[in-house]
Amino acid sequence: MSDAALLDAYSEAVVGAVDLVGPAVVRIAAEGHQGGGSGSGFLFTPDGLVITNSHVISGATALRVTLQDGRVLRGDVVGDDPDTDLAVLRVGGSSFPVARLGDSNLARVGQIAIAIGNPYGFDYTVTSGVVSALGRSLRARNGRLIDALIQTDAALNPGNSGGPLVTSRGDVIGVNTAMIAAAQGLCFAIASNTVRFVVSRLLRDGRVRRSFIGIAGQKSSVPRRVARHHQLAVTSGVLVTEVESHSPAAAAGLTTGDVIVFFGDVAVTSADDLHRLLTEDRIGVPIALTVLRGTEKRQAVLVPWERTPST
Image 1 (tube, helix red, strand yellow):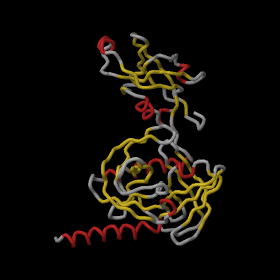
Image 2: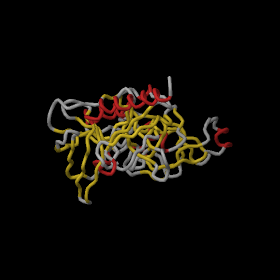
Image 3: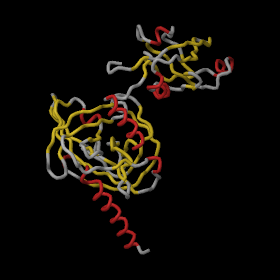
Image 4: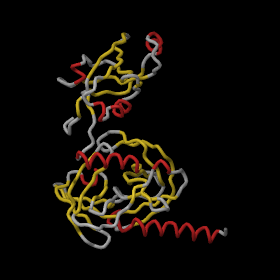
């Protein structure tokens, strides 16, 4: 195939994907106490459910959703999950155009990636590139680590947040969430399989339920001699820097200076490892922690609570 034919095929693939997904992309204007902001989102059900980023709607007192056909509708928050930077809105109406969530596990490095959004108020801007890498991690604005991100060089700018990252077939494989401002072509999207899980929980509960044990901690190395003495195959753990009073950790006898090295039979080498384990299914279920207190190994059994917005 000639170079010209290849370029034509590439163009047709991008145009076809945009034709499929573009009508479902929306602009979101957030009105709040500190002025306003804007971002993107996309309809994923015909009855008006919209996926966007949590940070797009954070602190908003009112939300205006503009469709590609020019209609401006009120957006109401159905659920919000700052830990994964995802939120679901609802707009009134029916028979909306929709974008379909694809399977991000099928994404391959090097495949075409197309971003649609509203950067700097330039509505329905399309950029294209490739999937640069898979399985990246990045911190959400609340400090929690978001895993399994898709890295792309499809250009993103402020206002793209919450818009779809799309394959040449028109499948949404990610929700655009961040870029490295000082770099070029380092952009990230939340994988569609993460989106599908989080959205299902937001529709069910309005939030994602997670468990809570009541500590602050940081990564800390475990001396080799201590690990060898206790036959522990670890080099680091979570140093407890604070224990909240009347928390599961306090009830289990944990104290500042303890180093958690196992959560059940799973090694924890950092606070991020521990956060990943504090899932919904741990709520109310006793779990044994292996803890180093100085050079002594201890077992502590605690029962995680359900995490609330204040924790």
